[in-house]
Amino acid sequence: MKQKNFRSSFIFLFALLTVGGLPAQRADVQGVITENAQAPRIAVPEMPGSASLSAEAAAFNDTLWNDLDSSAQFEMVSKSFYPRMAPRRPEDLKANDQNIPEDKGAQGFWLRGWADPPVTARYLTFGSIETSGDRMVLSGYLYDATAEEVRSAHIFGKRYFSTADVAGARQLAHDFARDILQNLGLGTGLAGSRIYFTSDRTGFKEIWAMDYDGSNEQQITRYESISMTPAVSPDGSRIAFTTFVEGLPGIYMHSLETGRRLTFYNQKASLNTTPSFHPNGQQIAFASSATGHSQVYIADLDGRNFRRISYTRALEIDPAINPKTGTQIAFTSGRSGLAQVYMMDIDGANVRQLSLGGGDAVQAAWDPQGENITFAWTRGFEPGNYNIFVMNVATQKLVQLTYGAGRNESPYFSPSGTHLVFSSNRLGDTQIWTMRADGSDLKRLTTKGRNESPVWGVR
Image 1: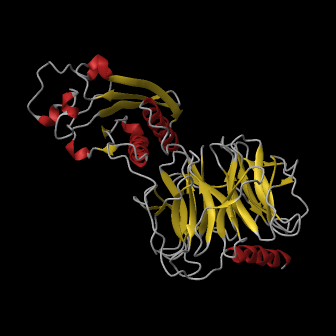
Image 2: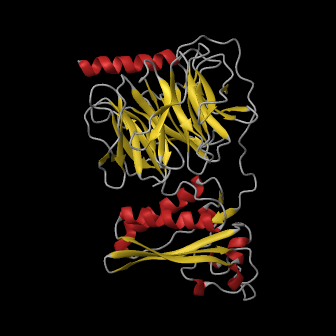
């Protein structure tokens, strides 16, 4: 009963930050994120495996396609246009000046067979999957299909090793996809990234993790209490979160490498919550009521050297440190009446309001470049019915990404900056969804229980 009362107090704190009136008009929205209109076309034919690796090969091929497609960096050429055969080794490729068969289905051993219509690909991946002892081996290659000569078409080739199972096959695909993107100077995409979130599927609110596409779900905490608001360290080695396991909401920290709880000293307060890691990996910001009501503080990773950043009579919560500079904090404050998103320097100076009023704006998160923030906002809608917005901090230009499809909350950028993860009850129960940073390609990731408060981290 005591825990239930504290939970009610915690929810009441959030309620104070999320109750407001209905404005007369919607935001004047201008795009701040643009799609890559010149995305190169890439052909990704199936890589074969032996009969004993049929399930693993299928998992590899599906994962590689999804990793490259979801990176938002390529135009994926439909496999229906591909020649019947594809090379497995560089030695299989034939020079373009050799006689190329008129049968387009047999042109897969010539680069022209991939660069010419109907495929018209700029890049070609190929290779093979085999076993070596108890390990699975991928020989993966990336070629420029438009090159005049085979020897100049080679971009990179590499051998990869994993366990000989479906999980290993998926990891091979993640590693190969990441190397493809990096060798082309296109970042790392979503391959291998993880989403951490709160789920009540066990009957308690616990922290869970899954791959970016919703696969490989894993339970992180087992406190049989209420654990929520996860945050992941920049290197992906630690997770911090709010938990009610000791009655009052406090911050716990775990190693994601060992699963063990790490030392974190919580201030004596009725509330310590909503952690956010500094990009230096050595500090953490959070909200605490150590001085009587919730304000923003910063401390070392173990909770020591605790110091106050914000100074108002209003409730302030959800600090988010700029991941690029580490010099600014976005946060939610009720200092203007309705909950709004503000920004201040890391020392508490230069406070300014980012959201434009007229509704509740909460749960700010930065993009990896520290130029845009995303947040949930009720402007133009009934109180409590949030939609996702993105704002360029320098210009305050806005783009609205969701429109009236239920309650859309807790947006968070992917490490690549190309996607957002968020929670939504658009189909009934609250679940985790992703979309591209322009609001397209909406995908539901979870189905079991109610799931919320997602954040994205590196593996």
